[in-house]
Image 1: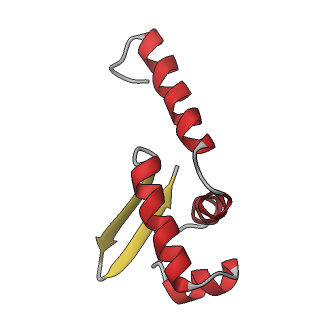
Image 2: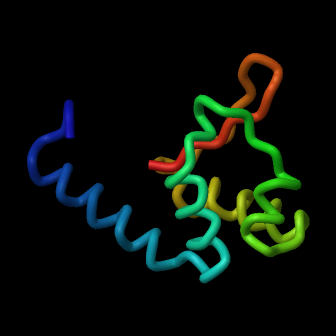
Image 3: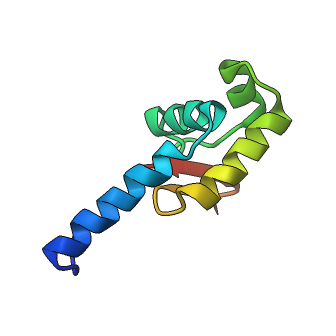
Length: 89
């Protein structure tokens, strides 16, 4: 990791792995969906995502909210060019 000593980079990577293990099955499913799609360059549409994931929009919103708390360094929601964008690393 840039700007961190070698031991710190390993520690941060370990913490990220631990955070990923804390995700529910639904949160993991949503994370992979976002990660595998390009919602940084293409607008996010909740209705379409919920339909594709076969979950309710409410469940999707809850999962997105939890992801921004549990893996905040790897999951970003932002507004750009009049649309919502969501990116997972």
